[in-house]
Amino acid sequence: MLKINIIPALQDNYVYFLEDEKTGKTAVVDPSEAQPVLDFMKDHKKAKLDYILNTHHHGDHIGGNKELKEKFGGEIVAFKGDAHRIKNIDIMVEEGSDFKIGESAADIYEVPGHTLGHIAFHFPSSMALFCGDTLFSLGCGRLFEGTAKQMWESLKKLRSLPDNTQVYCGHEYTYANGNFCLIMEPENGALHRRLIGVKRLRDAGRPSIPSMMGIEKKTNVFLRADQPDLLANVPLAKQDPVSVFAYLREQKDNF
Image 1 (tube, rainbow, N blue to C red):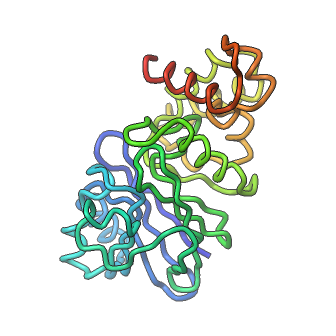
Image 2: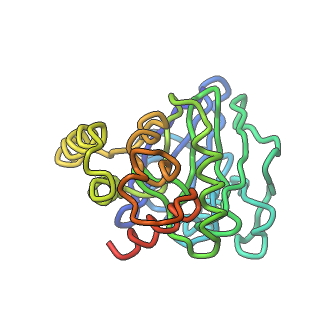
């Protein structure tokens, strides 16, 4: 099992500090900057960092790599196809690769769309998914490099995980994402109830993360592009899931 700590960084990023409870091995996921991680480690008396996990190459997810690696010697773990964009990868992974933090084994998923080399780390024993900017709480990432078809296939892959999977995404976008979802699906009662809870958390200065996959399936319109309740509100003659997803993504880009 992993002990998971959330570290706010930059304006709205989240970095995750992981510790395998049995072995004490540690990792950090998507360190956008080093200082918040260093502050956390000092405050919590953590003297080592074994791994640095990157979901994709964007600067707000790898910006702290160099400093953390130089200070602690942690091994950078990233997609092998991004070796030209993420410097000094020590452990190159792809879908199906074996990787563990101590005794906590990860399933690696290739989830292109936001970027072509995006991956996600799923730790089944901890019921935890670290999905970067592919899947957000009540949203998904912009299509900077991939296609709508690629992103829809990636989201379906993540959607297939158990309902009790905790979703740790890259940013605190939940409330704004939820307001967009409400426009697309105004009669979704589960979504209305969820946003009340999200607002309470944010008003109290608490993160809305992690989300739960089961809740995302009921309230995140980007996971619902093949669901009849949502399709009734989509003004497209052709309502195949890829076309519907592309429509939703375009609407969100202009929201």
